[in-house]
Length: 158
Ligand code: HEC
Image 1 (tube, rainbow, N blue to C red):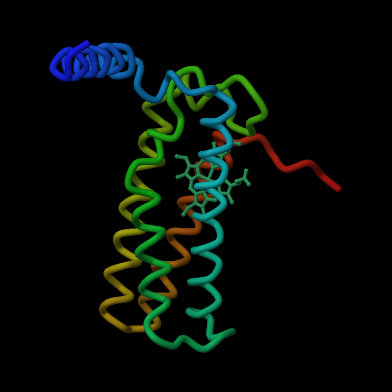
Image 2 (cartoon, rainbow, N blue to C red):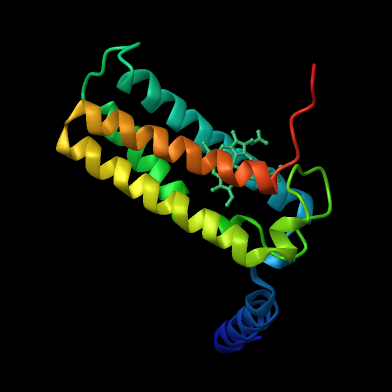
């Protein structure tokens, strides 16, 4: 093979990999990997919101603008929750109920509501009025809960 042939072969192989990988996208992943990934992202969602809550309620002191950072993270995570629940990611060790897929419009409405509430919280944090921040935090927490109530299996009772 000449250098040119090698390069040509390389390009052909690259094209072949693309042809296979592109149409399958995220769905090509193992469903359990998608589930684990979204649970990790949701855990981060809960972590950042709890951390923001601790600062907002004055349980810990804020220094160097962490509140805005936690809230920015929450906003980023909630930009597109439905993308974490592609078709086929219902089978495996998941707490997601079938309603996520067969009541998709309702699910997406909850996600949109949560996205808007997280944007509102971020706005309130930049505004700096603690009373408004507390109110927006509560509304966001309620939005998370509303989705969990309809679309997530209940935690096991101890
Ligand atoms: C549109 C629906 C929806 C919204 C909005 C939503 N969640 Fe979730 N959440 C789910 C579902 C469904 C699961 C279960 C996922 C699974 O087990 O595969 C989940 C799981 C979780 C978990 C458990 C993760 C784990 O397995 O350890 C936490 C924590 C969590 N969500 C926090 C939040 C927080 C905080 C918000 C709001 C800022 C939020 N969620 C908004 C649907 C939603």
